[in-house]
Image (tube, rainbow, N blue to C red; front, side, top):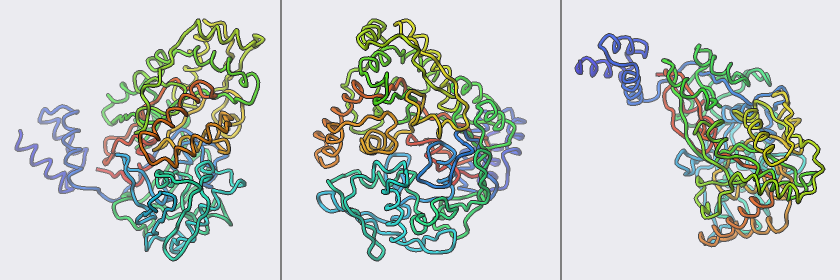
Length: 528
């Protein structure tokens, strides 16, 4: 039997046997489906990426209000759309290292205050024009503009000046920042012709695929860009994203073969789905977190005693067990966990405490009226269940939570960052400076808790300029304590990314930094 299996795997490696043929012959030899699947996958990987085919994804997080403007991307579908047709200066590899994209190389001054990005030659936009340092400059200027409403506005605040000279785009900062290259990997900062100044929602990017279909809230289609500069990416002829906000519909679409990739597999069905004969479930931990956010400038959440009451009234362990089914870990009311290199694990873990919750609630002087928490299925997997658990645990402390269920369509445009108390999620960022700059700096457009503190901003700027690792870690620790004890973030859990692919899809690489290989599913996967 071993000789026959060796012959079969050799045929796969040579590209002369399909998965269906291999599985059928392996079954006839008495090989289990799981073992046969592993043997086929190993042989297919050895053969290297195959070319061709139409790769489809079913994704949560799509709305009729979505735009192609990278500045406005705020949920999963726009995120994945951007990674199909767009390209950054740099991206983050699965191991956390930098991957040079439009930037060919990076240099900095000794004090990490001035950074020079050499723009790669021969990179084309989809309109045939060559990407220049001037296009990069204009892109960054647009995202620095208040009117752009860019999700990257917070991280652009620290830039004093920018310029383009020849093939070099350079940035001078107000203060040194050793993490500046990582900030340029933010998914909003896709390079656009002329920076998108004339047409922010242009279909023209410089990524591996070109936009063919753009039906917000329904589907998005792309075809291979023939002149894409990187032969190691973009293996299929075309890709498609179907907006499937309903979790059951997403899983059914994968199992029926309607799509090949799905995100946001609900933990409660992950183990069952993984037993399906044509499906592989993948999970990896990282900086992503599921949260409830309060606007600290809006009553009754402008009262820190009430905020503390709600933080102590949530049972994190129960949530990880019942909502995440173990696919994650408890949070500590700050957006940072052990996936960040300068995380301070000595910060005490906040626990569910009915007595403390009741005491803080009493001290808040709240009038006892219902505290409205808005939630939708699409806020995060199990969000409605998590809100119900929160309501039950808060009730034990005498805190009256009222759950208001909102429709998925419009949630990210009409509820998140507008209503004072709602469910949300963050994918996390590669470094603490980027996470804090995006969501907690006073001037950040995505400061969704309205946490605006001069002392916090000062610590953030101090940390950017501090090149001593130990001192920098100490500054981040102070910021963590400040958010944990005085901020508007209730962070009960850090989620694993739980996703699934059909078994004929090859090239999956667990990537902690984001949803479905940090957006690289379309450019990295192939059919085996």
